[in-house]
Image (tube, rainbow, N blue to C red; front, side, top):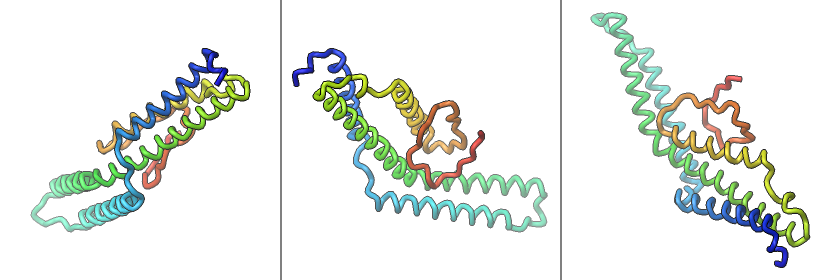
Length: 189
């Protein structure tokens, strides 16, 4: 390829190749992607655990207070039992959440890999056609968005399995989030 003497082109191609290599490395590091059956089973198990928790909490609420137990003491006992049920439920859900999160991470990194490969191909095609390298480079906005998305992925990974109930992602210029189904979101806009 005769145009590989252009330092700007070499720099852009090097960045693109590095992105491809880093993304492949991450995919290799996180291990094999769970098969769709395992993901479906995990989602079903999570739904079962949630249904079981709802039933346990309903039973607690509907349980009669023994005559010998003071009203405040009974409420305290119910609160303790509720916390115990919720903790047990979260413990049971951890494995299934991990399977789903691993699948979501694979999906996100596979998309990043596809995008990086397409960018590399576009750079190569532009160089062959004598086009401008700038046309093949991601815009500054795309670079900022990629950095923000990586930061968000890190925040969510760090928070996973901790029982975190709120994550503030405001002001992060998010364009999309990977599969966020089976969640209970409340927007504070």
